[in-house]
Image (cartoon, rainbow, N blue to C red; front, top):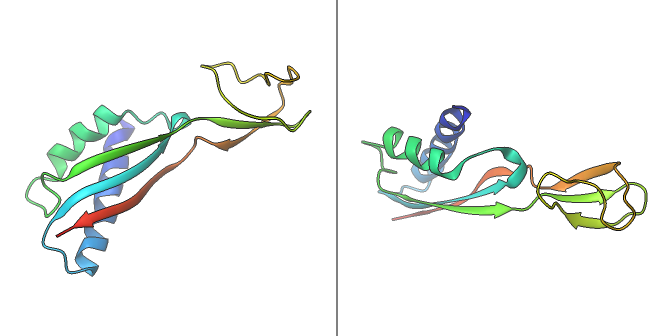
Length: 113
């Protein structure tokens, strides 16, 4: 259900910037979403289709760019992407890791007419 509030925030950002640009219509909203964010694309699309009705964003295409979970091992410095839910360093077996990508959740850009 948290996708509803995320989608509302995303729509507000897009509408604000489109209005500032004097746009008549938003055609695309480009989103960057990290795999660790627990955001489900289909849910965002579902809520967007409902809450964008009667706005200049109605009918806009949502473009989802997924960012894989990427980690840095504190023991050996290895940088790697996750393999499912196993975050253990594949190089040294270390379990002390830092997330360096995959938590993203942002509106990257919008396309307007």
